[in-house]
Length: 266
Image 1 (cartoon, rainbow, N blue to C red):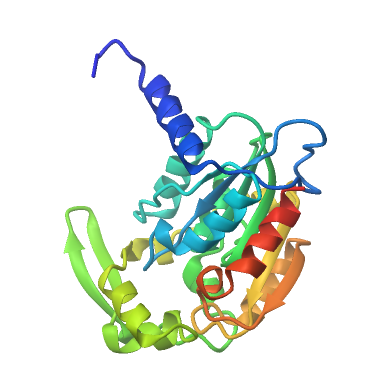
Image 2 (cartoon, rainbow, N blue to C red; image 1 turned 135 degrees about the vertical axis):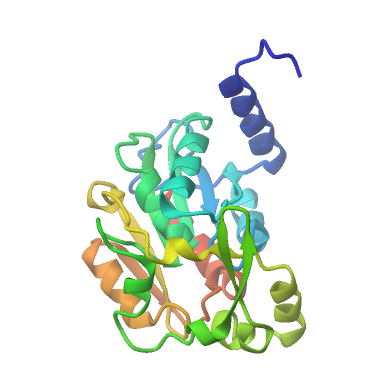
């Protein structure tokens, strides 16, 4: 690649290719003032112990509905750096944007969308929606019910810190109890760990204070208790839908997940 091509230009081109390849689009949002203008691009952000393929069925539904969709990788290295990564990624997306985050991905959309006028709505799918100064660990344990304890994690070093993985014997119960064991065995083997420092890293100024928000509460979540999800949704003034689902509601309930994102994008 020529060294004379600016990095921002390369990134913008790559994002455009990804959006075109996804062939995505859907009907508008109360937050995304699309009207007769362009439909918003839906940007889907995965959390820890997963990757962007968890959005596959949701992407298919949104694409068929006509929305441009992009599901970028989440580095899972820390709140500030991951949020900065997403913030920079959003500069390569043209036009209005609806951000949806699952689990720890909710922390990223909360931080990356702050002061970004292109982001018209935030959608939290069984996700953390922290206020300034709050942490993932604090919110996860604010209400009883989480099964993700230190005993259910195993730790492996990487050059910049320590990664946490959910143990195989706990993965299905903690993460995806409404999916077949044959599916969750594959998910466990392919899980992407998160750096353990992110659990105690404080979040910044929340975008949900100024951007319309939507929240899908997973009533059978064993990682983020439903009570914690309801608390965060209510505090954000989010339009809220509840569904009988495990933590991976976007996998077990893709239609309901896609419908809520479409509502946000009208």
